[in-house]
Length: 244
Ligand SMILES: NC(=O)c1ccc[n+]([C@@H]2O[C@H](COP(=O)([O-])OP(=O)(O)OC[C@H]3O[C@@H](n4cnc5c(N)ncnc54)[C@H](O)[C@@H]3O)[C@@H](O)[C@H]2O)c1
Image (tube, rainbow, N blue to C red; front, side, top):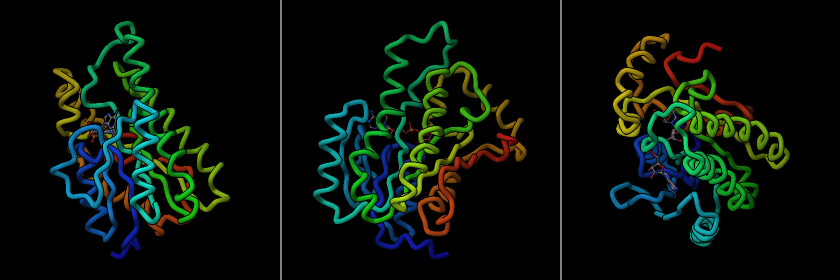
């Protein structure tokens, strides 16, 4: 299927991560040129351009986005995929420390906002698309990860708000909300992970573990002209975990 992504320039944050790598190869397979952004090494990810940005640091975002604008004739798509997730420990709310709360909000919410702000002009020029990686945990509630879940809820609200603000420029803004993926990032949540995974899978309409690669199709759809009339929406990609 031709998604019309040939020669589109896609800026993908978190390209070194589990879902990020799958997204990078999915976009590349459809002819897009992928600019990978991450704090971690991108050396072993197949990308057209590698840009190191610490999304917790506004100066780093400003400098990295300048590099992107200097090297790329245009920007068609921004995928805000990076997040603090895998390294977080599942903690009851009494145990969450404030610095950790602020760190998660800074990367997961403010980082996405600043990426869009810094790349807004080229996005408007190409009447582009933004796709945010939210989480099913924010649509249904999920215990022991209040900071993370709140950050993904903010991203869903930001998706709606940005869609109304950027629509008259022809820029679409959507999100995908993956369920719990059985990957290294999720396993990093600690010893509770296997128990949570089993109970999550049992609640899915299709009770089979979700894989990172299964998130790709919906992101590509939302980045492509096949979704030209879709904006402000969050699509769960979760084998039927979220029921409404
Ligand atoms: N894996 C899941 O089960 C799951 C479920 C729902 C939503 N998600 C979301 O999907 C997205 C991808 O998740 P993943 O499973 O690939 O996680 P991951 O931890 O494998 O990847 C996240 C990437 O973000 C990068 N990153 C973290 N902090 C950064 C910073 N300050 N600056 C720049 N980059 C930074 C990491 O280096 C990593 O490469 C995330 O937004 C996550 O919240 C994941």
